[in-house]
Image (cartoon, rainbow, N blue to C red; front, side, top):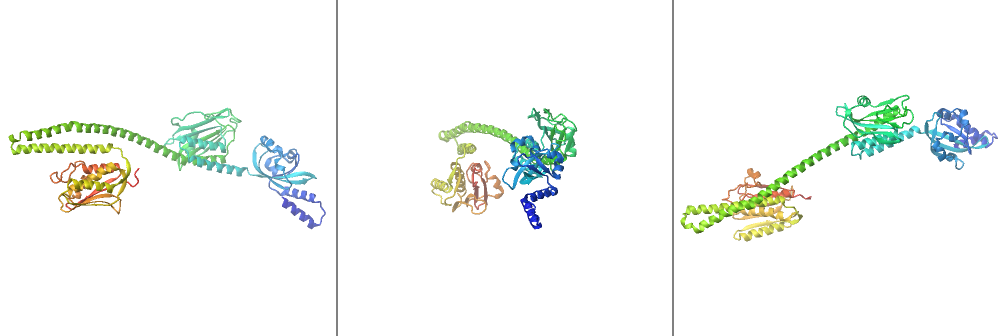
Length: 554
């Protein structure tokens, strides 16, 4: 506006007229009044009484020119703003002053948000201020809705229950449109019933829950109409005009908006808000309200999926607890059985072996060679049975032993076991090839048992090989795994699946002694460490037994 005044001065100088500067400025502002599409006023600087008003202000605010000239700036402010803002708009130094956003009231009582600017001027030889107003109500409404939608999306992403999501939705609707009562219903799959999960009403100015979530019931007419036809706007003339002390969801409101909450095309819920004021909502509000409801649809579906996962997890955990209890009971029975085996069965075996030995010592002269052979076989069988019992007990104890993980040098264990084997049978010449510094993490005691079984197995099955060789190393390609390899009797790969079973033997006891529990023990130990075992071999060409342990054990 200063640039406008400067141009007027230039025109006056070029025209050669001796018009006073102040008079020229006044005329310039009057011309600006006539041409401006924005509401403008001139008010006295001290009293803020209007001295002039343009046609745009008359059209927008509804007052006549005569009515405006009997009013002042403070008459356009809502009552609560008068004492707060006072003369803030026109204070300051000479020149244009940006005054920011103000609320101004029209003659019909509605309020607009206006961007105001003020400039000091002379009007009829008095100090005055020129006021310019730009209505930004719609822009502010759009800005408010954009912020509300963004905030709702952010908060919905963190919601964990459908009730929480419903609260967020109706709170946002309250910020944008205002309501005295609200309701949120979940729809049944056939969309004929609705389950209330949230109902709020205004009682003595405070929001209260009017009912607890309950079972689904028949959908109300408005709810059913929203499901079938889309968002509904109901405005009643008269109705319950004014501020209601209590507005219950079941009463007939003056203004009502109902919108389906949709996930893609499926209606999964219905939300409604009610207002006791007539014409509280518009068709534009209904469109925005439907947008809010749709904003909530994806979140509700996500929450439904999460709740279903939680339900399934809880059900699975229940089954696991039940199965664990069953396994614990089975383990207790197994322990009782093992105790019975170790005490009740071994005692008769000792008797059989003892009596057989006594018969051979005292009555050998009364028995022929065949009878003595029978007694020796009976003693040997009882001794074999005793070894089987010992191996079974050892196998059962593996499942109950707590793992104590620590760094383990497998090469050192293998060297120790190989030395024990050499001392036990010094007459045998067996070449041991043990790779140095093979380490892992696990229970050292159990891994020693596994490695002992594998090396003793190789020692046994190379017993008939003239130049026996046993190797302990680690694979360098594919899956990292340790292995024990020998050049002994080997086995037929067609029966490889039987190797790690209890009492499963591919050779007769007369060829190679044993109980058939050693490899089963190896497999159980490695499985307890989270690893796996397998084997390869060929008849009379040796065998390789592999075990892989997890790189990062839990």
